[in-house]
Length: 182
Image (cartoon, rainbow, N blue to C red; front, side, top):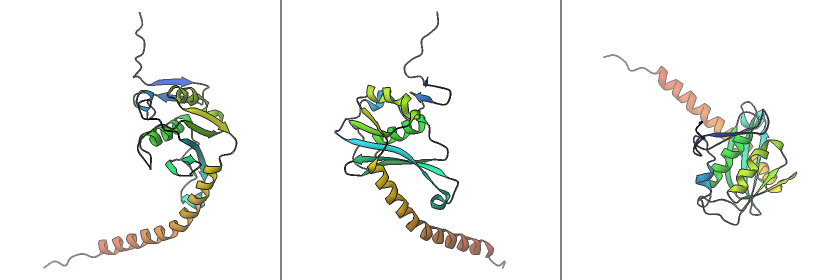
């Protein structure tokens, strides 16, 4: 007789060949832990935005944002280098619940996501831990936060680059200075 899998094992749920959700041990999104976090009457908008090379100075990357409605407070963010999949979304949400940038760890009562079929495998699991899932085409709080993020990034990036260049030049000068032998 075959042994059934234990609930603690990693369980992939396959919607199609491209969307595999990994839950459980070894994954960030562990329902047994998340369901014990206190639940607050929060609504979070969640999405990934593509940032261009001009902003990041690297290959294009996606940045995930979790933002409160209507306050527009950033709860969590995370960068990924490839097109985000459902596991990236699950990880972003788990980090937002466990280690938010504000307040203590908690579950929101509602999550609003942009329409995207890749997110579908996670919906049932969010509902199982008491989170309502709403899907819509526009995410106004995310749009405002991304606009501000881009503004600040463009403003800060030149001064960071100048400082890094200065520190690199200084390190190069120091490494060429050798103590004299006596």
